[in-house]
Length: 270
Image 1 (spheres, rainbow, N blue to C red):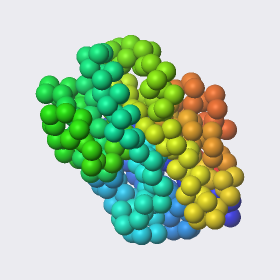
Image 2 (cartoon, helix red, strand yellow; image 1 turned 135 degrees about the vertical axis):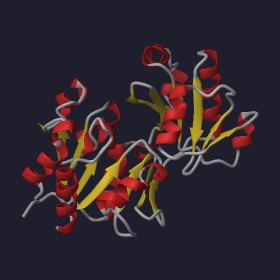
Image 3 (cartoon, helix red, strand yellow; image 1 turned 45 degrees about the vertical axis):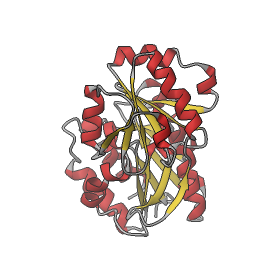
């Protein structure tokens, strides 16, 4: 029997193929793992409303299954009834971040568990795409002070990839010293609490379930997957992963278009 008790799986570029579908053999492998009492944890930058359809499709449901959202800003039960780990930004941090983005003429929004908020009047096309993808309603506010009662789990900037390259290169240390700066896709640049990461959330879940971290596996492809792949007992890079991820992973599997998640589960879990 496999020693892997928890499997943390990224979504985009990992679980789903380029047609944004879960391949049938990936779905089957996940469900077989669940049947063997392995905790399969979808671990994503998306909020819970943006991952519910995937959880339902895979059968990761109820109060005894778990999901990691907002790039590790939240770890909760799949039904949302209990939060086991969370780390947020305070309003002063977000005000500083928003001011920097205004200087950079770059769109940014704040997100809590169930909604997004922005002081921008022109919504960038990539923000519209992202919010639609993850089922997140967007509220336009007049100023940052209207967010006083909002638990800001992350800030996310949206722009063309070349523009975000420049923004990322110019993030001042006054921001990067206080927040983790993560590139989750070419068109998303995210800012989260220093204590929030996919790796920290995975470790918190393992501790809560009394599972040794060496008995965990993490599968991903992008920079925001780095911490969990580095932290897990078995770190798996997708065949389509960026080189930074392949360098630190213990093994490499097939691409997301060749059911790399299924191949990893079949070999190391099932």
